Figure 1 (tube, rainbow, N blue to C red):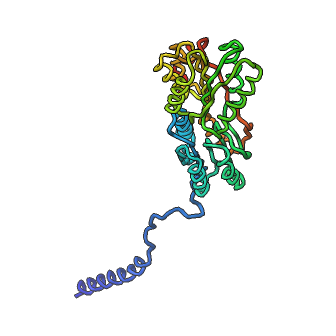
Figure 2 (cartoon, rainbow, N blue to C red):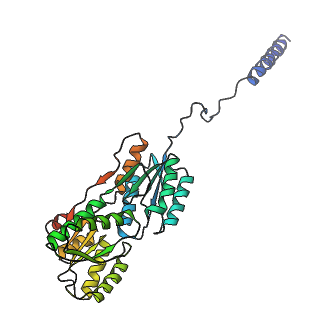
Figure 3 (cartoon, helix red, strand yellow):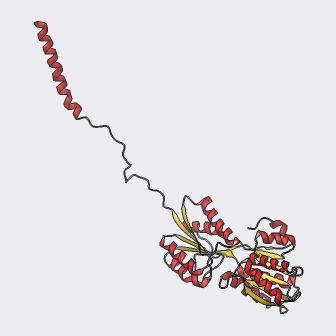
Length: 333
């Protein structure tokens, strides 16, 4: 009997202890769950700048190279800090205006552009400047102030070409056919006006015909074919083309007619094909004209970082002819 009582007492004590322990277990806090960082302590991503590049025309080797230089300068150095939008106006000023308006609506910080022609692009460039967007023009300029213009000196090129042709090639007397670039483009205006102004110092040197070929080879071929029909051998001895593509087109037509011998062909840009033609003796000279794509992107970033950049930012020009052509082989574009 005594043992049974002790057993009952022991069982009751165990039940009492279990009853006391249950409320404590029910009130224990659950294990903490993983949570997102508090908004106040989260580190925001660094804000990127947005650059827009408006190309006048990607259908020309010089401009294709320029666009590639812009893209490479950005992609190789600035993608962590800069996003970039590229447009192609397809050789149409009205499309380039529309392209720039679209870039502005997308909130660009910097506009880099090669204007198709100055007058139609000036109002939208002024609008961009007035809205606080930094504007960098490459190669060609517009008729309104910009933050920085980057390019070689087209006036200097026109003057240097005239002096070289008149003194070195013609010895003060002879006739020239000029092939102009896109009418209304600042490069065309400067390469023509300052060429003609310098020739005033050489009264026996004359430009007997001048026409646009829009910086393109095929129109230059057609124009030169017409000139060969109009002028007999010896009636002109120099072709001055505003770029190498047109100079190469003139050479093509002269070769086809068997009349390249005795004609000096001078271009501008420093295209590899032109440098090779100088080496071969088909072309007389070219003046290098760096496209400024790399420099334009670098300057854009410097401006956004608060640095001061000279305006205009002038790129060097070098005359390439038979005396130095070996140094330039493969160094064009």
